[in-house]
Image (cartoon, rainbow, N blue to C red; front, top):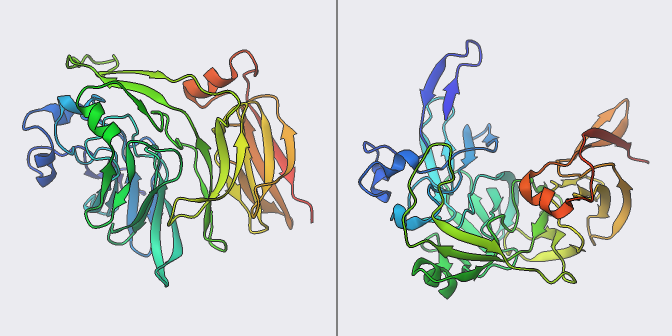
Length: 360
């Protein structure tokens, strides 16, 4: 990560998201040069709090995927780091998945908002991780206020608030021991890169959720790092799903409990679209087969849908022009290999922009 002077483009500071031997966090890595290939990339834009003057960035999985090649918690892999923009100093950090070995990453969006916690308004950071847990942190200090499953999650039952660490199940322990396990969620996550939305009036998060199971095992042999080649050290496939069961959901979730207020099931394909919630109580989202839809914020009932020519895997936006409110969304078969797998031979590629006017 680098900080640049906005006027001149001159580099002001540079920081690596895996610590070098001069930093205290290096103790969480093997005492060798594995940190140089350790992952923790930041491939989704961070969030910023102007009052605290802190920028929050999520980091990705470790390299290789298997923890056996890099024993330890491996900061700052699969974490959120709160950075002071002027200096690059890390004010605090929190690791979603210590010793991350599932390819759950941790770099998707961090939503900043205010919610009531134990009767008090708190400025929080909310994060629905690919690991299946929904976190609420105090965004000034990094204190964990909640960490609960929001989809089927069998490697952990949630976060121990005293230690801040996930409470692991027998599945996680058997995986590390070398056994082949059925892992929930799959490495694509309970939610992936697609952003969720937050309504401060309802205090709820609105998001697309995925339901798949991985067959996962750590390899006995350690992977050899070769630039340009995959560096994983695990064997993984997807368990065949029950085609009558939902592949995913749109849902309204309580951030402090992870429980859904409602879920709108998606059987044919899951959603890889971000959501948008309006002050008028409408939630917008899309699916890879091209449908863009509006749902009632309080019930999840689909109020309206429109078939675009390609997949909707993007983030809807809203704006006003001459006193009228509009919603725009991109339609194009993207979203990586998973969206293509789910729509192979069914959806045409191509990119278009669709804009809709909200009626009074």
